[in-house]
Amino acid sequence: MLNFFLDTNIMFLQILCFFVILLIVITYFKINSVIIIKLSQCLGFIFGIISLVIIVPIYAIYQEEPNKAFLEKINVNDYFSNDYASLGFGICYKNNYTGETCLNYLKYFENKIKEERAEKKEKAEKEKAEKEKAEKEQEEKAKKEEIIKENIEKLNF
Image (cartoon, rainbow, N blue to C red):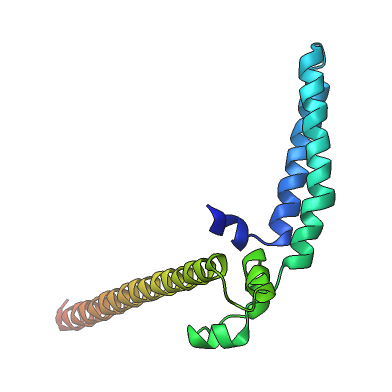
């Protein structure tokens, strides 16, 4: 669960805070007859504002791109490092890529990249097989058309 939070980026957090505030405001204006509901919604609204004012800047300050040496070590040459800017890499950067949290995050990130590569490879193999099948069907259809054309030419009227 920690890796989920470490892997999030600033845009995701801003969108989440926006929707929390929006949901609270919408329910506040729809249900306004009970004082307890108003109080809970006001507290939720205050929490949303605090999240937006405090947590988002923390993410903005500590969010870092992965170190190029780490990307080279796990053979990630086909990705842009800024696509993976996250709080997890920020924590690793602040701790010089040491510490249990950082090492766990790095293992998680490496496994995530391996899974993405496996999915891409599987998808590419599937597309290749489908393409070969379509080409084979096209060749068979062309051969059949040629046979039909020859048979039609042999007909005597």
